[in-house]
Structures are given as C-alpha cells and as structure tokens.
Image 1: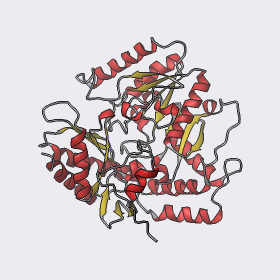
Image 2: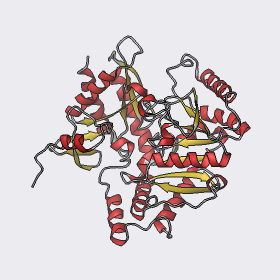
Image 3: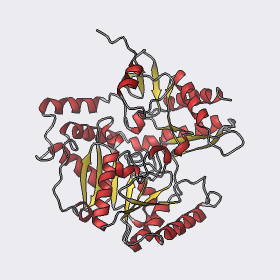
Image 4: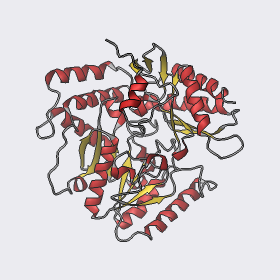
Length: 431
C-alpha cells in the first residue's frame, strides 16, 4: 500500500533540517537517460547539474550499468583486507593518468573522505597541523574539512583540529587584487602567501586548493598562479594538495586535471578526486607520491573504499570517457555553451559575470548596477528554469548567488543550445 503522506513531509519528519533541498516544491527524480532525468510526476528535464557534477558521462550509461550488474553477480563486497582485482586495475590507470611520479592510490567513498585522508597524510608527513587554504573554498563536510573551508555558508563550526591560514587568489574578479592584470594579480597573491607564511609558527604542512572552486561559484585564478605558489611552497617544504573532486577527468576541456593549468613547476604532491569517476557510484580517492602516501606508521583499511562494484563502475566509466574523447567534447561543446551563455545574458542587468571552462560554467547574479550578491534572484532563476525543463545548481560563496552549470560531458551541441535557450527565458522572468 502506498504511503499517503507526501514524500516531502516524510523527509522533513525524519531527516535533518540542515539537509538542503532545491525548489519550493522539491522534486523526486526517478530515472534518467543520457543528459535527461524524469521526476515522479513524469516531467522530463535536461540535466545541467549532473547530481552535483557526479553523473559525468551520462545517465544510465549502458557500459557502466552492465559492469555493475556483472560484478554484483560475482561478489559485491570484500574490503581491502583481500586482493581486489578491479581496485588494483583502476588504481593503475589513475596513477598513470595523475601525472604524479611513483604514485600510490587510496580509494575512499567520497570527496570529503578523500580530502580528509589528504590532510592526514600531509600533517603526518610534515609533523604539523598548520594548513594553507584558499578564501571562498569548499573541501567537504567532515570535522577536518569544514575547518579548512573558507566559505562561511558551508562551515558550521569554528572548532577545528587544524590551524588554518587563508590565502588570497582563487577569486579573480573580486577582492583587493581584482583590478590588476593577470601578472599583477598573480604577483600580489604570491606576496600575500609569503606574508601569511610569515605569521605561521614552524613548518606548515600543506596548501590545499581547488583549481576551479566548485561550491564557491566556479571561480578561478589566472592560469599559472598555483604553479607560482609552488615555488614558494617548495622553498619551505610545504606540500601542495590539488582538490580535483570537481575539476578532474577532463571537465575543464583544456586539461584532464585542473592542476595542469598551473603545471610550470610540476604536479601536486597529493591529488584528491571523487564525483565523476563513478558516474553516480560512490568513489573518491587520493593519489600521492609513494614517500608521502607511505608515511603512515599504523595499520589502516577501508571497509567500503575500493568496493569491487564501485571499482568496476569506475573502470567502465573511465574507459568510456577516454574512448569517446569526452574531454575534447567538453572543450568543444563547453566553449560553444559559454559563448551562447554570454550572448543570452549580455542584456540582463542582473548578470555580473559569466565564467568557466569546458563544461563548468557559472553565471553570477547581483542587484543591477551594484556588486551586491542577489541570492533571491538566483533562487528565482533556478525555479523558473525547472518549470521550463532545465535543472541547474547554485553556489557562490556564503551568499549563493551563482548559477552553476555542469552537465554530463557527453552533452550535444543541440542540448547546449536548448539549455541556453531555457536559461534565457528563465533570466528574462526575473527582469
């Protein structure tokens, strides 16, 4: 017998108040195919958010569902206490793709857990609990990762196991350096980093940074900034952690990893990933050079990280991504989409900026004629787009005034045009 109480009411009764839901009338997604999903009322939507950048290739991708079903028919779970062929095979491929020499890979179940592990490695290796993080950043919801999140809206406690210093540079068009050209901006951010290090006592463990900030509203520095930071970090022996949870696997189009836009001084010491590699399955992980990964002197396991089923999904998904050059598609179709978005927003006074790279675009909304964020406008556009059959995301620092666009990497030109057209109508509804 069907429960007569609406699902939203049941959600509010049994789940935490802080567990956010989109839309005034939240929707239940029941199935998907390609770049589209359907809700429980039978409405069809073009998905421009992919489960928060997680459905990376396509909904119900046959190659992934087949791999999951076949592996589940053999064995679903064993833990890392036993040899695990799919885990080893995926680790080999990720290590080779990472760009990190003599790489070791540890699998987790989420990006939060991956960043948590990276912090454990860095602080143990350096014997320091001091961390550099970027302003406006987001790195997860665990006790350690909220303590390095430079975004008030996603950091619910000031208590912390770490001493965190926040550095300028991740937001190009706001803050004290916004008026500088790219070279001047980078030089000012490097000087700020040097100044921050002058305040730290002893050795700092690591800098953690998203090459393009996700929750922060798809903001990024000029290319090369983290490479310039690396020169300073290397002088002090400080590790560089590149948080690739949202930027990895070719989403930016120009590069396979976000750090490669800052590669003039080599790869990061530690790279974290999650989201897209599983195409919806729970996979996260850490890549680090062997001496860093192996610095732990106690036993450890992962009960669910490296699960045979999720690893089979990751292998199939990665193969599909590479075989179909979805990075190239993100560059081509993403470039067209960004051009189209800039065209349809050019006459909208509420749009301060359209930014992004590949299939990772942000539209920042402000109160017309000002630089004041307008989260109400962002929420209204989100609703208007849904009513017209398009799902978007939100972000943008503590004030959530950026529309986040990150469809599956197999997006077609026709779907990009369709989504831009719907967005044009949705933005027009708030004028």
